[in-house]
Length: 390
Image (cartoon, rainbow, N blue to C red):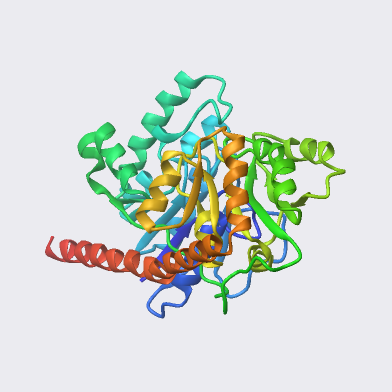
């Protein structure tokens, strides 16, 4: 079965590149799958080995539909699989909207199309996203969602996303299914993380500046450090494209504080060391439009978590039985209290670590990818029978 996976892909730092990488790793291990990755162009080097990669689209380009369709027609696949959110292809409105047409156009060309949709537009907080004309974006987002729902099948990563799409789009959402995010493949811990090291590291990891902001976390660090003298906040990741210089500004303000470190971008192959060194993961979000890949990575390394009690994070924790200590969004006092509790209690820390390692074992990426492939085989087989009967 020939599968074209449309996704941003490392060493690109594009939206969902890590998820695309781990999907591709799982598919690569199936001898019945001929995988070709239609990835975004990047100046970063080197190219990852052992993958068939065609870098045929460019972020923010209005020509992406033509480029992608040309590749799809060239390869004549059994399945075209899109790993996307609403801003994967572009943040310029026209280019982003045009790219959302590609799955429907691929289906009209006679190819089975599947979308793994990481966000739904109704959950996007337009204020957090810095949108200037929210009424226009709402209209475009509604039409864009209708275009995506023209694919053969759509998978979302939370049950409530499927319910929301059904409520807003009726029968158009009949093809929407829920599938779990999955835990990334990689290092498995030989033992649980401990609190007996020289530092107790609070890890914050992501694309910062929109709905993921570290201001509140920084403000509470003095109180945390007084209660836990060896506590250190490690901030990894880069600015969100919509908020250039966000991290640089904060780094200047906190340059003389020993309890705060800014790492910048961390390559994929260095993530095991980063997560293994941490004591707790902090998720200081004000909103979210999708699931959290960082939560699933933290589970893989047995990390306890402290997170803002926003609906998506609460749902992930309940759905996948992940141990999270919550605080009300914007409540710095409770955030500090929860961090101190986790960093000060060996019992609480160990219980959360064991629970999160168990949660990670429940949905390995290989198993999630296998469920996708089973569906693809059924759909392709059904389509072949229908063609033969005509």
